[in-house]
Image (tube, rainbow, N blue to C red; front, side, top):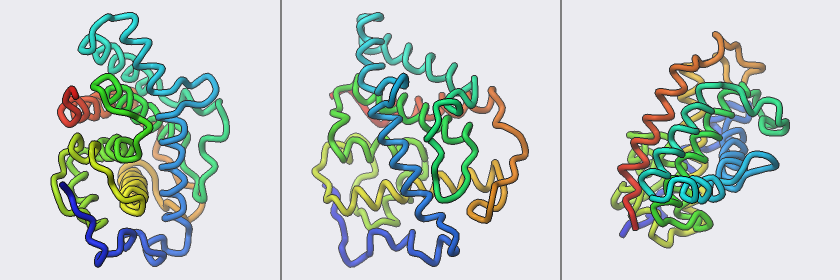
Length: 226
């Protein structure tokens, strides 16, 4: 059972000095809210993770086959790139974020949440939602947890089944958003939070497909059948 050490401020890794006065911390929070509200709960024509999982199970008949279908579908969506750019309203962040990057992580979030749902996890539980977000950062999950003051197992399934304090979940979610934005900033575009990012070009379809499958492998490992 993990322990939240209140002597370590849960948001100390995202204090105002780190956003350099340009709203990066606010962007991280807004970005995560989009991942949760759209990637997990769905919006408009973009179905929720639970609906996608249930439909895959109805069509395929078994959980393993349904998971395979979910991964394949989301690999195709990620590779297509930029498919959510026309939906509008997804990228109203304090800093400009390339729409295809937001779209990639929304797709990855829905895929991860759908797999977790198929494995028996309740997507309405805050701890499960935080664990899904953590799956997006892969091997960095343990580092993220340590930085927000969480002491205990870094196994996402164990984290998902705990009754985590609200402040801890908020700190974890914000830290994940910050980590994703900083990773994207290093690899994909320059000057995050200092005006409109300069894109070196859209993420390649092949790269997006590989990345989403890596996340899928992480989720399959971290969320065993309940």
